[in-house]
Image 1 (cartoon, rainbow, N blue to C red):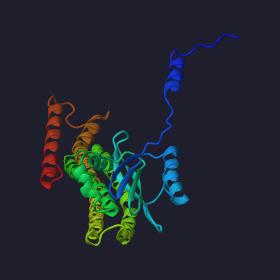
Image 2: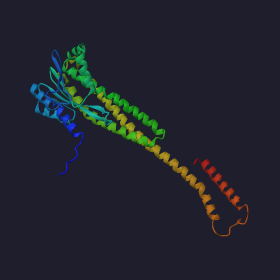
Image 3: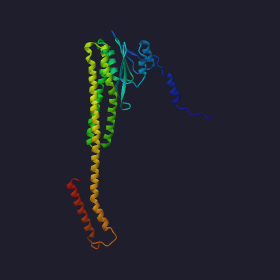
Length: 329
């Protein structure tokens, strides 16, 4: 049996796979301060879940929700902790698409656990700032787990407004392009903008209910003089929703305007072509008439050709002047 040719990359690929060490320790980041721990676990897998099961007595359904990637925003209340699932908009540059980044929270009297299913910049930035800046960490942690939860959620909600601003700028550019006659590009841009707005609305709409539930449960882990902070999150969320509602109406109006502009330009084109056809129709009739193989007036005259050309020119000028006066040209 003939031997098959071997790929020059096969041995290297196997060696790389053998060298790559399999992770045996959970990736758990912890920041501690007197009375409070912040535990951050990004992209939790089986090792991280086993670590949580070993150190915390959470409900089995909560661990199941951590493994799931299709959870709706919600707030589950237990006797000694809260389990919260929230979604935040995240722009994926690799696919040029707006996606939802899920962050799960466990909130207790002396701990806060964050479990983002992918990299969330605002969570990472706040965690690193607490790790490196002791004064900031002590100031933030001294107000309890409820205030730390507020700070994380508030930063993630505020991160959506620059994205909304970019959508607004994009809609303004589309409006300018419509009246510059960039028909094909405008259709594509409107379609992309509508998709972004739809994706954004899919993230924000169910989140509004979760924020109201969170606002009702905040008192368990928040000092009385700090209860207004979660109202601020709801206000920011509603402000973002109002912007999306406005963008939805704007993009629908731009789509209708673009269709009207395209129809108007098409009508103008047909109008010009129709006028040109009507101008040359009498000339075609005259040429056909004098092209017949029969005896015609002036056919023996040496000036017959020039007389016909002059008549044609006169007809062209007269019809064009008539169309011009009526505004058809």
